[in-house]
Length: 156
Image (tube, rainbow, N blue to C red; front, top):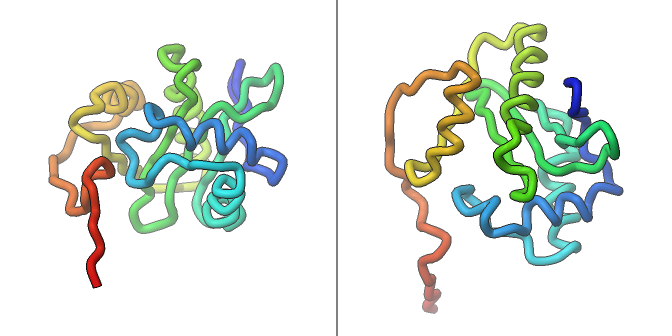
């Protein structure tokens, strides 16, 4: 919780909000999954990623309406990898930085010894969030998976 945000678990009635967040191509451009294409896909996404209680997985909501506009999460050990996303109409307001700071406070209280995060070199704003959180650049690497905009042809 912060002055303007509530972090809470996603619930089944949040599937429309999950769809709004994870269907937007701009929001998900640099992430390793394709944007969701339908509400049934959002329901599957919810069941695969948010019902499991491992790690730290939170919907980011404005306190005024408790409707998810984004997410913050930290994976289970050993990586403790930070991830976040926000609907683009809420970009550039410090919301994700604020949500991540609240999550980091929780991690400290729980004795988590470190946090990792990565961002695409073409997404420097995400890197700026990490800097505001106090994270330090360590190294660069090249992903081994195929870009999402590359056509794939399967042959039998």
